Length: 258
Image (tube, rainbow, N blue to C red):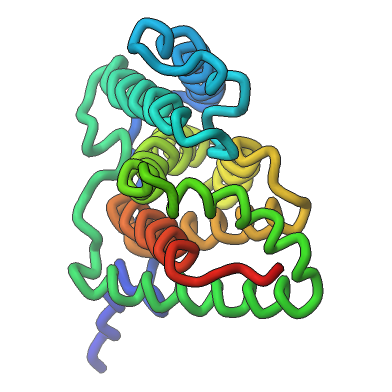
């Protein structure tokens, strides 16, 4: 009797998950470091603009949530750049490599993993958009309107870079790369770690409606699932960036209802 051939890891559906935490960080210190990185990023976004010739008034609002004047886009970029730099630095402090600490590995499913991830992302977004638009249209439009001026104004290209590149890199590296990996090695396991990382990531979007926060949380869980199945943070960075870029493009091309 021949033995059953095990299914390969890395497939979105079927087979074992491909994710394996290889960071040397422990859960407690990683959580404290994550909070510290966010705090330093906020501080840098408030302190540095005057020295860079930027409008100091742009630092009044939350630099992680771009409900700000167009001149404040550089403030958001400062926050993102500091978060990326500190996350990369923190990931190698105990030794090891950035690639292992942040799961910046090739997806186990190869290029097919990206295609499947995009399909999953689109499917979830169709469901979420349908529910929120049909039941709570006002809240969905209220969350989108602050972005319209950013992506349609004279600095729309900078806004697209901040939303489509800066946000995915800084947020995925810190929350689903650095923090989730350390928490997943504890008794929490992967999904306990994913819940905590996603809750903190959702908190970074304070200012949205409750419906908007629920949507962010659902997307965060999907991105965590994609990481779990493919074993690669590159997949979540790609999907996060694609989602933000498509939203920015849609807001630039389509007028929101009054």
